[in-house]
Amino acid sequence: MSTNNLQSCKRKMFLHGHGRQSTSIDDLGLDILVYEILIRLPAKGVGRSKCVCKEWLSLLSTRHFAMMHCCHISTSYNQKFIAIGSRLCSVFSLSCEDSGPLLNSRILLPFEAPWNKVNILTSFEGLLCVCFRNTDKLVIWNPLTRAFKEVSSSNSRGLYKPKSDAIELYVDKTDDYKLLHIKRRRGRMWVHVYSSMFDSWHKITFANKLRCWRGKPIWSNGTFCKGVLYFLVNCFIENKGVMLFGFDVESERFRLKTFPRFPHAYYDGNLVVVHKELHMFVTHGLPNWTVDL
Image (cartoon, rainbow, N blue to C red):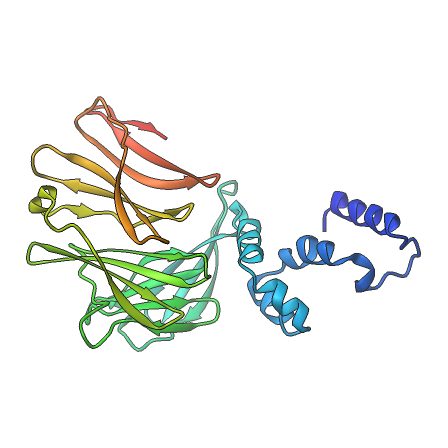
């Protein structure tokens, strides 16, 4: 705990009449305990803390605590990426301020698929969506606990094609972690959503008759921001260029969003979330590329 936080704790204990030197956990107060101490624990520590009592289990299981904990640990010194090789995954800790060698730990792959056939498609709040290239099957994987769930079904839902599909993980207001799968087969588009809470897929109505789909549009993976999944769609017909679509996770409807026009014909962009707001990282202009946010 930092010096400022410690002094804040002491001031609050004094105001509540806890001025004695010997201080128990009860004396700290629930707010200080949760938002100054427990929120700083690693994920495994939070999991163990849920076993202390029913009150802690209830508090630490809320969506609000999960978001606060995620924001606290998602700092430059705690970012990580996974590199898959052989039967082991190397987990590297990143630091934008440190140019020294990357530190890494190793974990075993929990599934039986050949390591060179495993593709990581997207991530969300510590969960990864993985595709097996030899079977096209999708898996949701938590590298921390090594737990995973194969979500592909017997009726071909959850089978991923790298050059034509788009995928993204998100969570709705009921804390149900879901997977949106957009796929194109034989010139038509299908959209399905997998629910981890109900372990099932359902179909989303999609406007297949839009003329822009005729040119085999390329969808980016989604970017989740404020209850909406955003996708960049490249349409190579009728000079439509790049379009921005939003999928509202509560109404489960797609809408075309306003998109800034660029003065240059050649540009490339990626959606990113900065301070909880949607941004676009853009490179544009030939022969001298310019970078904008």
